[in-house]
Image (cartoon, rainbow, N blue to C red):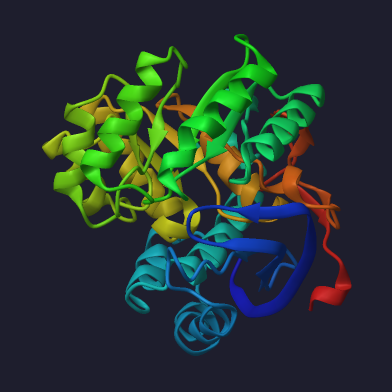
Length: 361
């Protein structure tokens, strides 16, 4: 099974509601789709989400990276030498993790097809179904309470509440959400780097004092500020998760050795795909640090890939793969089965996609 071509397409899907965080507001998914074609007729699909404020990647930069640097390195290579292909992909250029992730996902899709097995079984096969949270965008307390109720009515039992914008109002936001959904709904909060270290500790202690139970707080401080991240971890009872601080295995091991965070959020757009994510998972298993599988604003292709990885590994105990649930439509046939908070993987080979809209290519 040799690679003979890489094709690129553009995916545009409106979101159900605007996605708002401390870093950005987005109204539609505008992603790059990758199609890797082989001499046997097998096709692998991947996806890249441009998130300039986090990864530094844009639509033009992703397309340029794949066309100019990645594709020339992979054409003609045989999938049976998968390790060699992954080395070529990683060394094709520095950074550009979203571009690498799209190609990596397509290659893992083909790898599963090569051995006629679903990817989650190839990677470990720990389980077949996982449960995700859903994100509640940062808004007024009243609007966030309404959005939270709507999510609960759809069947979601875990909410990830975006905070970090106008820090003094964040506690009021959480009060409103908690009052609306009650005690049986699990809450996670994500500040997206929006707080200063001492400010974060003050806010989190106030949350503890008023009795709002929070499962964890995600990336409370700026990504580069590992000392500040550790300060927050050391001064609050609420577990702290590192997200934007962790792109590579090197980043992960540094945080684990410093004990700068209690948990690690793995996202394929940050790691550059599944191959590097597996290295972070191996480190997490060694250091006994639980992980979450997360996503950017991604559609069903890359989120299905993330779901396969999450299902394969027991160290991934938390799931934040709500991307398809935020989209207004699903243009794909096949892949994971997304039923509100449940994601079920099929036993189709690879990622299991049957049909991709032709308009993309």
